Amino acid sequence: MIELPIVTQPSEATTYAAEPQGEETATQERRLYIETYGCQMNVNDSEIVKGILRRYGFRPTDKIDQADVIFLNTCSVRENAERKIFERLRHLRHFKRKKEDLVIGILGCMAERLRKDLVQKEPIVDLVVGPDEYRKLPTLVQAAQQGEKGIAVKLSRVETYDDIEPLRTEGISAWISIMRGCDKFCTFCVVPFTRGRERSRPLRSIVAEVQRLWDQGFKEVTLLGQNVNSYRCPDTQQDFADLLAAVARAVPAMRIRYTTSHPKDMSDKLIETMAAYDNICKYIHLPVQSGSDRILALMNRTYTAEQYLERIEKIRSIIPHCTLSTDIIAGFPTETEEDHQATLELMKQVRYDGAYMFKYSPRERTKAWKMGDDVPEEVKLRRLQEIIELQNAISYEKNQELIGSVEEILVEGPSKRNPEEWQGRTDGNKVTIFPYDQNLQPGDRIYVRIVRATSATLFGERVDQPH
Ligand code: SAH
Ligand code: SF4
Ligand code: F3S
Image (cartoon, rainbow, N blue to C red; front, side, top):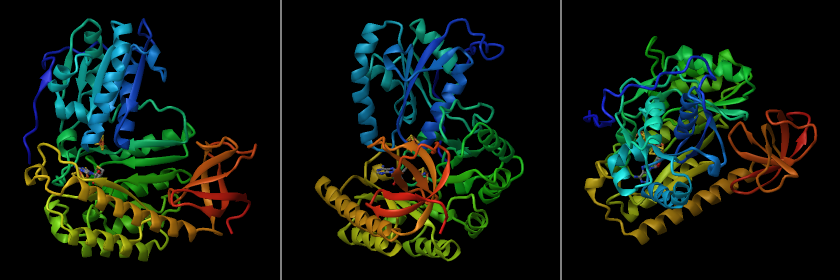
């Protein structure tokens, strides 16, 4: 167990701004603009932040030039993610020059990782607030408007924001964090340091939130956690499979997804629960990271390639057409050509529908940081390229196999490229494009026969029947 960082400024004695009584009592309306980077947990956290600040008269805006407060909710997982934020801060300088009392805050994982360095390095930053300190934002923003910089980066063992109603923008799909933190300590990963220890929300409150979302018109929810298989209800000790079943039963017409599973804890019970409910999507994101046992051990992933493949077999025996995706890292310290080949081999064996593929990026404080970063950049890049090319070919083949089949699509709205076409997703999470039809509404469930496919997208036409 690592020591929790204890850095909190303004001091512990800071009194929180008195919460206004009722929703709309704050005297002056101020506008809040948030840009969100990183994973879906950050997306949901930004909604939580909006939920907290709305009670103090802050209205979300998507117009940055009208904002009184600008937050960047940041990610630290790879160096590139952080580089993007520093670039973004440079662009924000002229907003600060134009509007003296504009408050600029860094939230999220980078705030947690870099703390006061951020304020020192970037004079335009007024606030640095880590993922477990968002309740202090109203007070900190108030102080920042009077010129006082604020840093609040203490991690908590209990904070889950369970009582905060996230302020979601309209849509049909909602994210729900069911737990926070991660105790796995994969040796390459910064998340256990930026997000702290694992803690779960009560099952009853998650089920109630899903029910409320259904009543508000949402048609799909994704239950979120860095490692959802570790979910444990603090009141009843029920596990993640119990939670999934409870949600599926409570709202039978809601499409239910979840992410992310750790292969070590992908239990038979969870796979069987997925199979038992029609409204739980048959899609599993199961990050493998590497196909080499030696590298998996150095990564502290706690499974071998064989054990991983056994889980995949089990999934396919219980849910034959389950869509599968993964995460892969190329160029972990000491990775040899042989290790790399083992990764390609595993990919060929599993034949994932999709993958998120990354070049290893050393992160300070992690165990892998101390292993050095000995795979040369050009070797990393070449290996990553080989992994991407192989995956693209497999994704393409797998999507070709779907041509002629009929898929149930949850309609999202106009496609990004062409407003004459609409898009939605299959149960297996594949983006599907179909012609616009004036009777269509976002949130409809329709059947689409697949007529064409690329490695990333399915194209189809609407049909009346599932067969
Ligand atoms: N909790 C999830 C995801 C964590 S971050 C899980 O356990 O799978 C998402 C992905 O980023 C990881 O799965 C990993 O593939 C990648 N990643 C994390 N740290 C990285 C690093 N230092 N360099 C490159 N990729 C990294
Ligand atoms: Fe990072 Fe591993 Fe935790 Fe995922 S399970 S967040 S990769 S430490
Ligand atoms: Fe990034 Fe933090 Fe998510 S490091 S991936 S935003 S948990």
